[in-house]
Image 1 (spheres, rainbow, N blue to C red):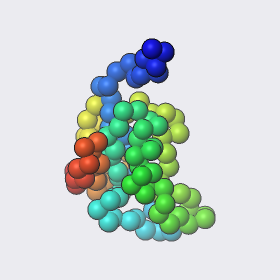
Image 2 (cartoon, rainbow, N blue to C red):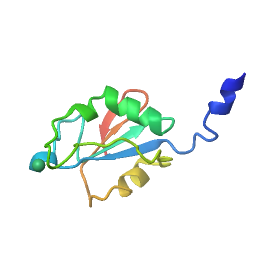
Image 3 (cartoon, rainbow, N blue to C red):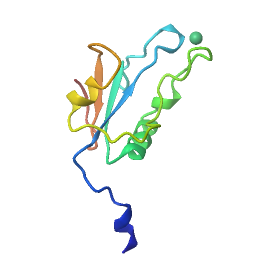
Length: 108
Ligand SMILES: [Zn+2]
């Protein structure tokens, strides 16, 4: 019964943005990741879990440049659409790949 307290109050925001740092001076664009990765998820921690399961946090990172991808540290609320999620990135017109909850992976 108490579990309902921990349920998200809204499912309206469900796309989370992972912007790639060009650690080491290059971007990885291999179909799993691209300059921006958008993950459909229930909430920020779920987005991080899904991103981790896809290997986002395992790509090589240069010590001086920092991690290639960072998690949702700020517990982001997410966005209502892929377009809105992409526009939240610092990158201008990035290449994008989207990971949907049902397992689809699509370029956007
Ligand atoms: Zn470096």
